[in-house]
Length: 132
Image (cartoon, rainbow, N blue to C red; front, side):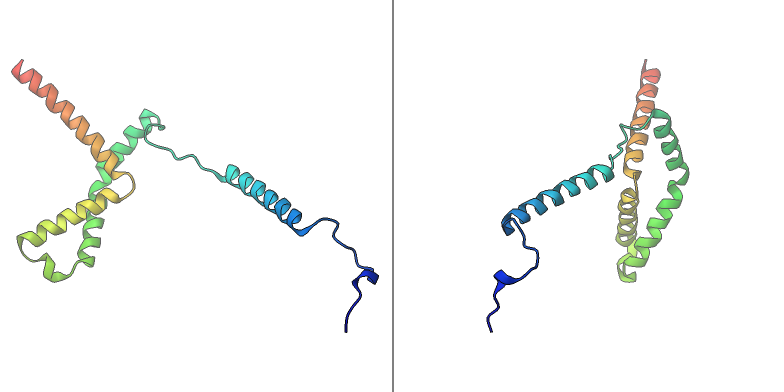
């Protein structure tokens, strides 16, 4: 049973299939570019923030760092087996792992660095005044 397609009254595509494919691909790429331009978020670094925001976040870090560290300590304690926490080396391992976990939480490492810089400036000025 052969069908004669030339006698059918259905509409026919006037262009070749590969031309349609390139047209669709081009439109899809344009659409994707438009979507990514609309939803592209600029990453805000610490250098983009105003000074009062940095100082405020640093002071909040000083106030709430004990709570964050205790949460990290509890998390590490629950993950490590009880046998590895015995003795002096177990305690050192527990507190070092907790400190590493604490540094990974949000921007804690940045604010630890800011506090270290401030502490070194204070020590430097104290050294100048005592020896000078």
